[in-house]
Every structure is written in structure tokens, then in C-alpha cells.
Amino acid sequence: MTHPTLETLAKLAQVSTATLTTSLFRRGFRNVFIQGPQRINPGRNMVGPAYTL
Image (cartoon, rainbow, N blue to C red; front, side, top):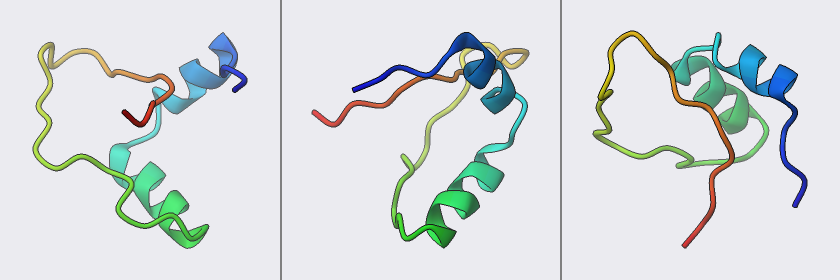
């Protein structure tokens, strides 16, 4: 698996979760979210690769 560049991560950090989820939904990816997560630090976003366990 290739990891996203820092530039890509910085761009993704500016996009809302709703926008990303809708984009994935339109591309055929359904249920690609976790229900109920909450921010630990309200002033920061978290961006990075996700791994299925």
C-alpha cells in the first residue's frame, strides 16, 4: 500500500467528513464511516490512512 503525501494529507484536512463520505458513496463505496466518533481537540482535524483490522 502506498501512503499519501504530506501535500495530499494537508488538502484532505481541509475537507469536511460529509464531503469525503459523499465522494466515496458516489464512487460505489458504501458505509465507509465510523458512527459516533468525537474530537479530542476541537481545533484540529485528523487525516491519515485507514486500516481494516
